[in-house]
Image 1 (cartoon, rainbow, N blue to C red):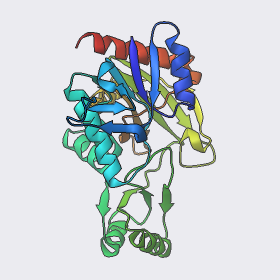
Image 2 (tube, rainbow, N blue to C red):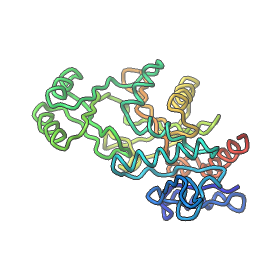
Image 3 (spheres, helix red, strand yellow):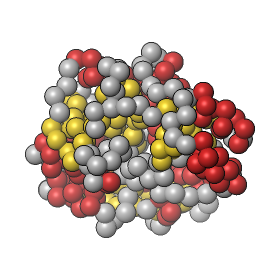
Length: 293
């Protein structure tokens, strides 16, 4: 089966996919920045990269989401939507990527469906930010609305520091996204949802409240109960993803909070921790989905 992969061709993930593909799948890497749309121009394909018609591929795997201007991001998502509407299987669908990349929208949909998420305040003004800081108990985690791997996340528990932090963010024309710091046991859970299968690891950091692998956390296999499995499946369905990474924090208050849903999930640490070929399983899952279309 042929499959297009939107990715950095030199990335570890594409190399791992090629390894896993062996002789069963033919993978072709493409860059988001090379996407072109054509409408009735010299019979060129509507969505292409160079002379390659992306509609010729049964499936397109989105393996990266590079930063860009508002115009670039909207165009890229619309191009994926046009591919999807032409019958190409896009994993994950563009709407699910749009939802998952927005922490506020993701949390709002999860909360609306009855899943537990941290109390959250999202605002655009300094006064609202300071008011929210007090409402949330004066000990908050400030996150970029978009972004992952722990980049740009900070804990603020001092009013003077909050004042300087929010002033700076407002000057940068940033959205202020804050949640209360939730005391936990030094780890969170990453549940990788792939169709009917769920693979889980515990991410533990002995020296930092942030548990991202990119920040030095230690990955360990994790056992799941039926409740966590159902939470991960529901969260994945709510954002419309076929493959997702669901981050859950077991807090000291005994509750499990869904922190976010990643629609372009990595699997490097997960594969190494569980000794599973996640890349191969992902290719098989995508192939099965494409064969049903």
